[in-house]
Image (cartoon, rainbow, N blue to C red; front, side):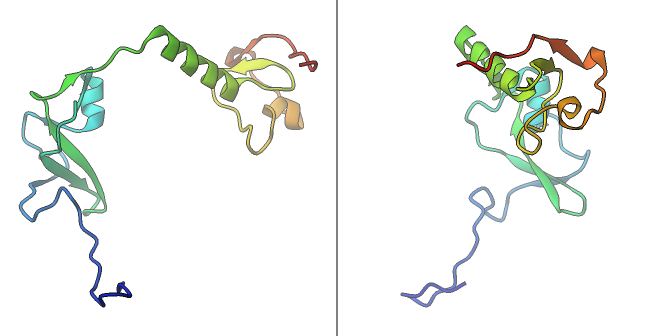
Length: 139
C-alpha cells in the first residue's frame, strides 16, 4: 500500500515485536509465564503489564501473549450493581419473549426471535429452562 502524498510504502508494525521478542512453541514456555486464560484460571489478571513473550502453535498461525505471573494482580471483584447488570443482560439473551421461559443457554433471538419450541415446535427438555410465566404484552 502506498500513501498518496509521500509515495512511501506503509508497513504493518507490531508494537510488541522489536525483532528480539521471545517466541515459544506450544508447551515449551518457561516457568513463570502464563497466558491470559491461564492467569484467569489462577484468579489473576495481567494488571497493566506488557507481554514479555509470545506462544505460538499450529505452525505459527495461532498465538497468545505470555505475561509474568509474579507481576500479575488479583482479579477484581465486581460490585453488586455490576453483577445485577450482567444478570439482566444474560436474562435478556436467554429468555424467550413469546413463552417467557428462561433457558440455561443463550437463545438465537437475532435469527429466530424466539426459542426453538415457539419457533417450530421442537420440544425443549424441561431440565434446560425455568418457567417464569408468560410476559405481559401491555407495557
